[in-house]
Structure formats: C-alpha cells, structure tokens
Length: 116
Image 1 (cartoon, one colour):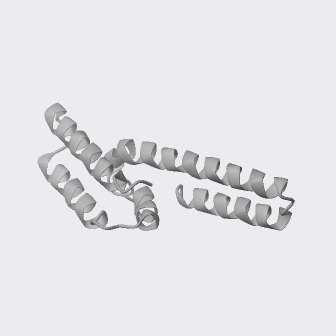
Image 2 (cartoon, helix red, strand yellow):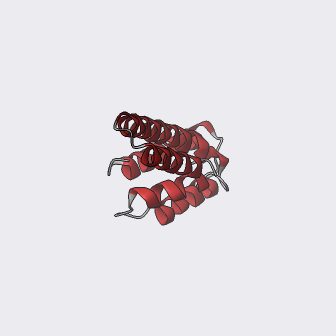
C-alpha cells in the first residue's frame, strides 16, 4: 500500500462524514466519534502491515466506515493476488516448486487477514 493510503482513507472518511452530516444520516456526536477513531487508529508513520491489520476492524463499531474501507481492502487484495501470481509463476518456471508453494500459501494467508 502506498504511503498515501492513510491520507486517502482519511480524506474518504471526511467526505463520508460531511455527506452524512449534510444528508442528516450521521449525527454530530457520531461524526466526532468516527473522526476520533480514525485519528487514533491511523497515526502517522504507520507501516503497511499495521494499516492492513487495523483497516478491516475500523467498521466493527461504525458500519458507515465500510464504504471507505472496503474499496481500499479490495484494491490491496487484488494487488497481493497479482504479486503472488507473478512470483509463483516465476518460481514454477524455475522449477522451484517448494518455494512456489510457500509463496502461494503466504499470499493466501496475507489475503485472508484482510477479511478477518
């Protein structure tokens, strides 16, 4: 995930909160609570792994967050899949079957963490 992913998520949250307040679907108290959660859970200088561990859990308390989180998680899952596929194909072509299997298992594990 690019270093801008955290900022992109925060921008999407601001848009979601603003829209919710304008439409009356989110109260001011709930908007403040969502903003506080995002600021606490997505500090600066997060690693990609930390971000991906936290992201799937952000919508546990605030279902509104799903519209922000799901596209980011889906994009990252697609990226993992493509990288693993390329690596596994290269290893199979090099006849490194054990390494290819290990890489495939790691890719599956990494991908499944996104949807826990």
